[in-house]
Image (cartoon, rainbow, N blue to C red; front, side, top):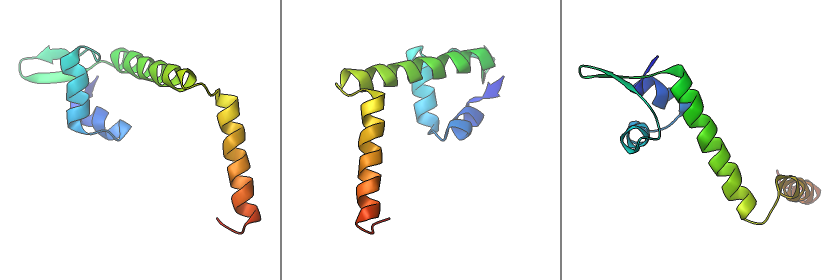
Length: 85
């Protein structure tokens, strides 16, 4: 189990971002009096859901991951050829 602050620090997120996820029901927690703890399995499920949502949004953008990787490689190669980087 993790404290909310530890989750925020591990993921380099603000406390308010983690608390918004808790308040919206996206991130399950256990409450012990005033203490709030995030179970490890709940954290893993939340991260998986966020990862899937980000991937789906990327794919809906009309560009595949492979195309984006190729575009990035082309841009880096072009920058190197121009002496930038």
